Length: 447
Image 1 (cartoon, rainbow, N blue to C red):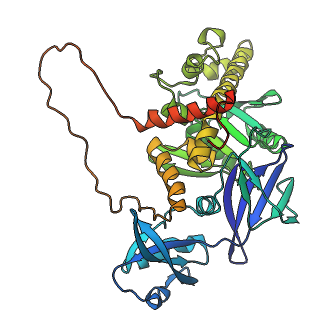
Image 2 (image 1 turned 90 degrees about the vertical axis):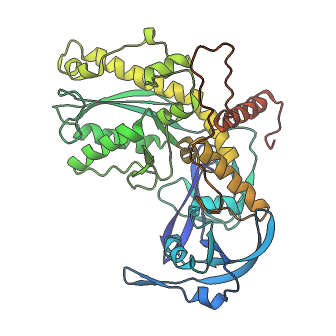
Image 3 (image 1 turned 180 degrees about the vertical axis):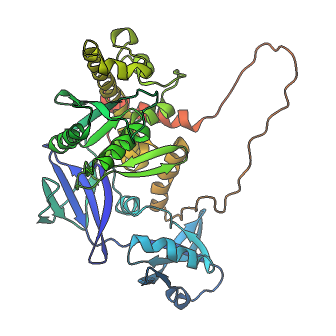
């Protein structure tokens, strides 16, 4: 199983599990039986009728709870009863959550619907899934199955995952390229199957973008990787596609990428495919490299040494493009970039897949999470087993600004030691240890 999302049909959410079968064929498992919900821990004796009467009008539509049941849960280990409020659609949850705040402590209203399904059905992304049910026709995958009770199982091997790496070069006569006026001149591609370089013609990138979209559709990758493609390449291609009135329909269902921003980082979602930005992974996971440029990280990890590749100053790319005698050098530079990117994917993705199995969220989400967020997701999955209510972010737990620091004593000191309890390093060490144990046959896959 690669990813889980949903769509709405006849005013009902349909869960969609994007999978790859043993032959490498894309498969989609549908489930139309799962309902969105959240919890309310009531303040005192709050009758169900009060909560059932909650309503909000949104765009002329009345949003109300579908039903409410009373369930036994634990709050930090203390048994208690709370209300579970079911809604018609996942989009209704935020509106009803705000209304429910006056009746009690709202819990688990911030869990994405696809992740909620993974937690409740005890599934594991990047691991095995079994589905038995009615075969359904689906245009955007090799086959489709309607199943209400998919089962997770531990695979002892990896299915044939198709990976596509890409990298763009832009015309930049004024320094930093501007997507509104500067065309893309090269898109280099490398897959499990081949390497290909697409080039622009007649100072226009319209045909180039169309060729790139066609290549993605034809190859139909499960995972697309780049180096800072979320922050630069995808937004740039998107802007150029808009200029030429081209639909950037590179997602598996024929839709265009979805762009969002979390903190300081841009994030891109490709429906049905995993978009993994290796730059974001390197920022979090690769120690020992101060400036995490593509060539620096590739050199550090032994993928491609700096002395073995073509190096061109970024500001000179347009000159190499305009000069016919140097254009081949630029093309080789683009090839080296994408070979480095694909090589980094081979080095980095296995560990990201292992994090994914531990954390129980899709690999593209996990690859862009900070380590603390990964730990939260892991704990959310485990909490369900114990019937423990997940605390809301910024909820009941106390927060403290900064840490306790002794004022330093001026002067020169000998025998200085530093000790840093880093959750980042610990979780990464555990994941690597487990992955190495699996590879050497020292651990069972379920360990």
